[in-house]
Length: 260
Image 1: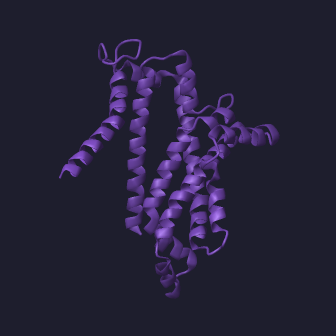
Image 2: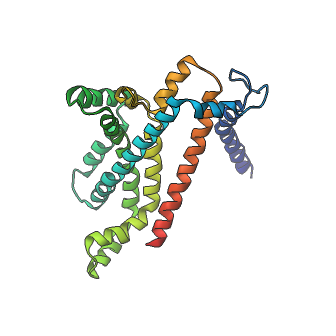
Image 3: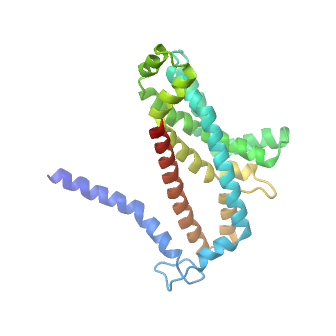
């Protein structure tokens, strides 16, 4: 009984540690003053209006959204078959292949950004947006392979083999038997990949260019010269957008699984 009480208190402390900063940043977003203060002196929503009024914020937000969505979708198209192949494979070097696929999560982001900038922009001279997309693809792919791969490894492939024995083509069995059973992994992979791409700063810092800048980079530049409640308002909007995207992806994949 005493042990349960201690665990409950500890859980409450951890919850408070996580939630109090979010609560404070949310409150400061509605401050009426020109500086970030807590508690706030007066209530106002003008800083949210300021976020929407800034053209650089609107443009960079759309760029980040486009890059994150494209990079995540490409990572899913590449990573799901790769995770499937690794899960089904009996190769002796499978662990080495996994390590290679996951290596971008070990290398510091600033190193990846510099390497991609040197290779894609300076050497190959590809367009800035294409280089940015390639850099974010490298960031997101490991999350897809790791998360979807874990779901694939827990799947009983004898079910797929039974479908084969009943005359179901391998491609059809993959889409109708395997994928519906790993939708939770795909959903989690999408969320992790998208969020890490959208919030990425080191890679974006190197690969951004004139007229092509991501939202986090633009926000960092804004903070350097303007530290006002606009920053808090942006944080609140990003948290709300993240929750909405997570719900949409989870519901969409869940409905797709039920349909199959």
